Amino acid sequence: MSDILAVRGLHAGYGAGDILKGIDVVVPRGEVVTIIGPNGSGKSTLIKTLAGLLSVREGEIVLDGARLNGLSAPQRVRAGLSYVPQEYNVFRNLTVYENLKIAHEFMGARSKNGAKVLDDELLALFPELPGKFRTLAGNLSGGQRQMLAFACALTIQPKLLMLDEPSASLSPKYMADIFGTIKKVNSRGVTVFMVEQNAVGALRISDTCVVMANGRVRVTAPAAEVLSKPDLQSLYLGDARAQTGAS
Amino acid sequence: MILQTAFNGFVSGIIVTLPALAITLLFGVLKFPNFAVGSMMTLAAYVVFALNVQLGLPLTLATAIGAILFGGVLIFIDALTFRPLRERGSITLMVASLGLGFVLENIARLAYGNTARSFALELARPFRFLDVRMNREQMIAIVAASIALVAMYFLLTRMPIGRAMRAVADNPALALVRGIESPTVIRWTWFIAGVLLAVGGVLIGMDRALEPPMGSNYLIMVFAAAILGGLGSPLGAFVGALIIGIVSELSTLVIAPNYRIGIPLCVIALILIFRPQGLFGQPHIRR
Image (tube, rainbow over all chains, first blue to last red; front, side, top):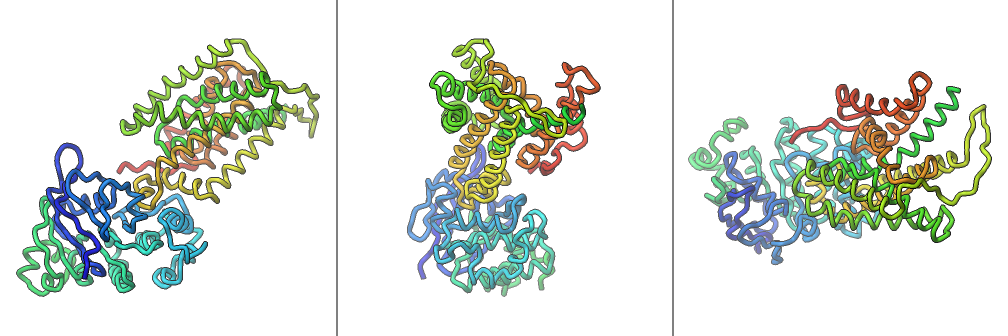
């Protein structure tokens, strides 16, 4: 199976110092890959750098054979890289319909959609959204906002869907829903690369686990292996397991 | 008397709506208060004056051509003045706008001197409706501003570039990852602001006289309208301008007209104390 994303020797950061200090990671086509690690390990910085919100200082990002270095964030979107930020991931002063319309107009949506902002696949995934079309996105609940952000990101058929802590600040009900939705999206052929603090919940739907610390990749292992071995869990997941109450 | 004064205030307000909308659009997208808008209106009005009086074009055509030209001029001014400073923050851009305001006003002064001028517009007899005296300039102002406002509404809600402008104003980082090219949005914002300021400048020039400080004289009123409505909210700019216009004019029934300028200043002070986000603005969240 070929890799959809290959990151080699990536350095990036804010100000003078590097936060990412030579990241090497690959995402195989069709998989769900989850990055875990302690706060400050550089997980979100990595995903923002891939999205084009931070400059690459050194290294290379290759998406489906095409080099992304030097492309702006909008150009990366049109190259097939869709990104859902952790928070503030919808335009709060615009309606649900306008959020979807913008995604449809500017992200390079498939022409088969025509003027419809949600195609049949997205309608099946997010059946609540049409009933909220005229609602301001800022007035949605946390879970509904996350669903809207997902729907916007999936308006194109992305080569890679990147999610920054999709379950952050969601209620337990929506937390289960969100992982179920990610799995459904993946089963439709979308490769997923996510950062997640809720390590156990995320790894249950993942193929591969990448552990980061201090701006470097420490371990890459099959998610099932990490979940099945208590010693690996305590080593890689640390407190995350206790926080989520997972057994 | 009250009805007449309120009508005059309504006209003042609707004229102010256009520059207030320009300020609020520019603030929404570029995140700085542009104090050069007064002088920009002045310069735009002189561009239309040149087309109307010096080249002999009818005022409507001169305004249309002047507005499009001035939209382009503002894109050029942005590239020269603000774009190199964009990464330095809103205070730097605000100070730059103050300096730019002086420069633009004095370009107008250099070209046309301090003498008050007027557009080539035939005199017309005022008419009365419900005991309110209305002159032709006032009717033109109401019609022109209403057309501009409806056009703005359609632009912002029905056209992709308008939605993109609102998206960038709402969340610039998210706009990037939704595929919106912010340089394109910024250029369109300057162009539209240029059109609004040109029409606003012409309406002020018709209402008063064409002279270098004409735009700056309106600056406090324009900012009061935008702040009252909520900086960044187009609907707020409209409502704020009408309230400021009518209240300022009605205040002349109880205070000397010379002190009228104190009303918008009081409104700015009160709104900043009690509702800093304005009537329609969103509370600022420090991220």
